[in-house]
Amino acid sequence: MKTNDGRTVTPDPGDLGRRVAHRRTRLGLTRELVAERSGLDAGFVAYLETHPVPVDVTPLTRLADALGTTVTDLLGGGREEPPGRAPADTRVRTEELDPAACWTRLSPGGVGRVILAAPRGLVALPVNYRVLDATILYRTEPDGTLAHAADSEVAFEVDQLDEVFATGWSVLVNGTVSVVSDEEAVRWFERHSDPGPWAGGTRDTWMRIRPTGISGRSIRPEGPAVIDSGSGE
Image 1 (cartoon, helix red, strand yellow):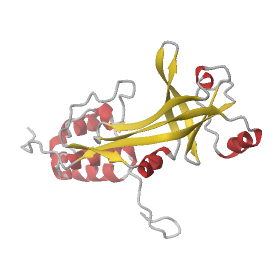
Image 2 (tube, rainbow, N blue to C red):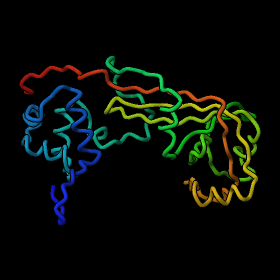
Image 3 (spheres, rainbow, N blue to C red):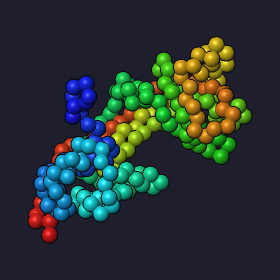
Image 4 (cartoon, rainbow, N blue to C red):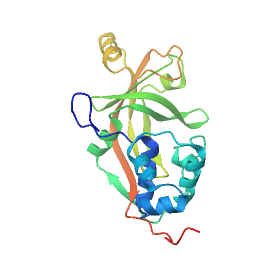
């Protein structure tokens, strides 16, 4: 695609296009066969995979049926359900992540879980976090459970799973958490590394996890799946 100044730009297909293309490739299907099964034009399937285009529910349902999945999965839905409800795929490979790969996945920041001991047992509390100098930073309430865990051993976990793509990863950090009390450091964090808690409220107590260990795993498909490529009748 050409811009007004003559530059060539590759269109972003969007999440739906990527999901359709990935699912089709995983099943070893051509665009023509998907089009035949869904009763859609092959040109439309190709355009959908390469451009962000709105799709009505009827063709989207036909696509989902042709790809052996659901509309919800193609749209990346089902977030309120526990992960892992899709049928197991024996072609998925699990691999260990080295420390560098673990930090690469953590470094963009986002949402993770702090796992700590509480009076009633272990609890896992979600936090918005940032990574700085190979430590984990987040903010919390001054009198909350997370603040009371200062100077104790905790675990911190971040994971990502896409059941349609059959890919995912999980990283676990073990370490000691402490309150950041240095005012100069706090001001610097606020300017450069503020995680911006989604929960809102007064969360001006900065916590930092200094890792004593980090490990992770990833899952990915080993190769194309094989399904019956009959007439689709």
